[in-house]
Image (cartoon, rainbow, N blue to C red; front, side, top):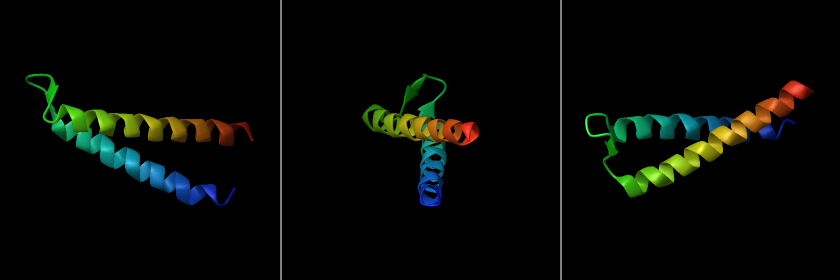
Length: 63
């Protein structure tokens, strides 16, 4: 259980940084990203990290 805490912290940091980056790169006037290919990569990693955090929080709440 103790070994998962640093990994969770890393996923929290990744999710926060990528969320902010995606928000900054999105052009709200034209509803497009500045760099669409890079935004797809950011979005995939962001979704994976949020999925991992939610999955892990459900495991902890069951115990």
